Image (cartoon, rainbow, N blue to C red):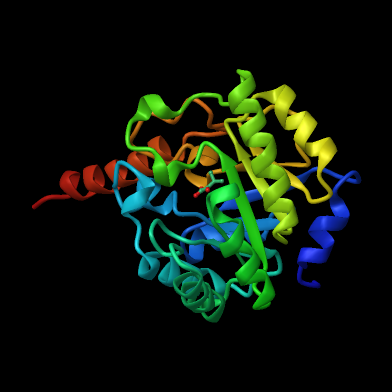
Length: 255
Ligand code: KIV
C-alpha cells in the first residue's frame, strides 16, 4: 500500500473527512495503521494516557522520539505526525534541531502548538523542508488546570484572535491545522476561509477532519475520560478481567 503523503491530506479538503488518531507504541501503531485513518499522531497526550502525568507539558523530546521509533517499526503507511513537546521549539534553531530528531526517528511531519506567536518558527521549519501541522484553540501545553479546558471563540475577542491564528498558521506554510475546543461556528468559518485542512477535536462537525486520542476511543484508561473524548468500547475493563481470570485460575490450582 502506498504511503499517505502531505499532498494527499491537502487534496482531501473538500473531498472527504480526514481521520487522525493518536498512537504511542508498536501495538497501538499497528491497530491505527490497520484502520482507514489517514494520519497517525504521535501525540504528547502520551504524557497523560501512558506516562501517568497530569498534563502534557511534562513530556520530553526523548519520550516522543522513542514512541515514534517504536511505531515506525510497524512499517507505517499512514502519514505519521509527531508532536513537538513543551519547550522544544522556543527558538528557530532549537525547533529545527528537535524537529530533525523526530524526522530521524521516523516522523513524516511535526505538530506544534501556537498561532501568531509561533509563525516565525513554523516558517523556519517549512523553509528547512520540515512539514508542519499547526495546533490552535486550546493549547494543552499551556494548560495547568483542568478548568482551562473549555470552548474558545464564543466572544468577539477570542473569535478574532483564533481566526487570525488560523490565517497566520496557514500563511506560515503549515500543511494543516488542529482546532481544539474551538466554537463550532468559528471552526466552520475558519475551515471555509483557509486553504489547508482543519482537523477538529471538540470543535463541531464542520472541520475537514476529526482527531481523537487512542486510549479514549477504545476506553483504555483507569481515569475518567475527558468530556470531549469519544469512547467506543471499554478495553480497560476487559484487560482487567483477563488479568483477574489468570490470577484466579492460578490461585484455584494452588497445592
Ligand atoms: O497530543 C494529542 O493527542 C493532541 C491531539 C488531542 C490533537 O495534540
